[in-house]
Length: 502
Image 1 (cartoon, one colour):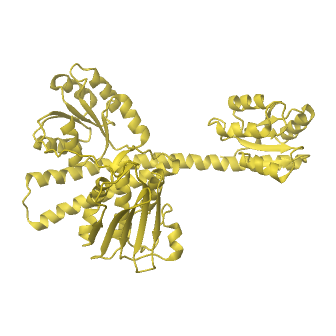
Image 2 (cartoon, helix red, strand yellow; image 1 turned 180 degrees about the horizontal axis):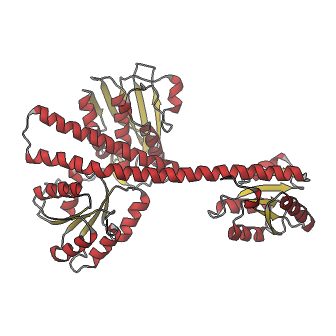
Image 3 (cartoon, helix red, strand yellow; image 1 turned 30 degrees about the vertical axis):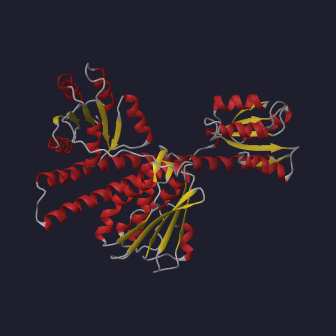
């Protein structure tokens, strides 16, 4: 829909009654709705209450100068989208205009201003404002679409992966061709999960919403985790990976999951752009107050002109158009964003096409990084049998997850809606509950609250099993009383760890 001038509200701010009257009259004749303010304080109040589309703001005001008024408008989340057109008959130097624009003004005009020029500038800024609002709305809808898409994709991935896990446990000794088929299903399912997670991280990157859960992490811990996640692609392409890590423990203050994701993405990137039977090398060495981690391959390399853009979103320099397995061009953008959140840096070098590549990542070490804590080795204790309830309206997902849990020696009850789950829990008193959020009769949040109110369920472990994994979703499950938030599909090792600690 095209916005007409009469749809736009202008706040005219000037302490000179005559000048204010003249500008208001010009704007009113052009078809705009106009409200007025004679001081900076009044302007801030009216802007927050009336939310005009544009503020016509004189710099010289009796209480607060226009530069400061503009700064406050742009710092306030409520008034930040309002366009600001600053004017002045006193501050007419280039430095004044620069000061205004750097302070958040959308344009700056020197007075006296011809009526036609004023109206043309206001209309131009309003057109710009409409475009910005439309882009923000498109961006908001994109984020909603990505979250919904991820949820819908994760729902079938869970039972697919769990079904293969179940087949492996029920019949571990099968012909090689059958085992190869199982491994193919697992690899491709994991690949889909990876793509879904990358899609969601795009939204987090663009909104600055990647939040780290920082704690002391030992270097080998997240490198081992990264190697484990990339082992399937390394084996399928027959690559040889060599390691050269420090003999002493190196401790980093960071998010272990995200750091494993960074190294995993670099290894995955090196593997997919190296012809089968290639060589990959992962080294780590202390450098100044940090640790430098390098991933080197003998793959396809990269043109010099592409090196500067390799970390940009959706960039896939050097790939062939028909290589759909190359992914979405998101992985290296995630690497850069996560490394910078850890106060580190990442660079890439290549001698040229066909000559391989090296990615260098630097992370700061903790001051006491040289001190290695003695950790007593503990034997893994087999899970004691637990009472476990699984609640999911996707019957395939619930049944196969229940079969897996039962196969591990636990007692299982399965329910497909909230009402039945609450009734079952009142007598079964499960020690752990895997609870889907999108149930047909009531939200999983409400079920969690009801379960917590049951006598004997106060200390039960409630695990939200859902396709939604954004920060706001995790916050909402925590507020509802869940102990854990797990994004579908859940892998068996994670499931076992949760039941072990339930």
